[in-house]
Length: 120
Image 1: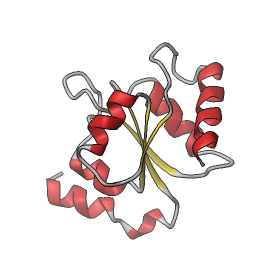
Image 2 (image 1 turned 45 degrees about the horizontal axis):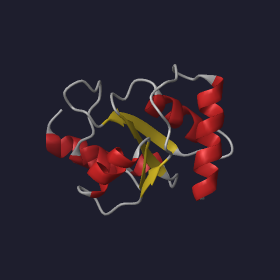
Image 3 (image 1 turned 180 degrees about the vertical axis):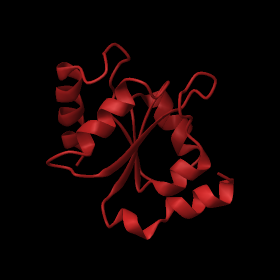
């Protein structure tokens, strides 16, 4: 799929009016997919995607199309927030969650909810 088609999909009207949240961690494998899972369910019900900011090893790297798609970006560290705010004017929230959890770890899920609710 070409870049223009991806940009068109970023504004696909069938996505509805749900808040679009891009969840970002280092590789996009553990923390950000777990965050996307949490924020896509009750009580948030957001339209979510996850990606990694370290493009050398991220499964799905953060790119201009994902940033264009998002209404809000949620990241895991201050370093990631600094890097993201350098490339977008969109709101970037740092959950300050260290890289020491497995995918959908119950403690990670609780931390995501706690940290996200603090900034809302």
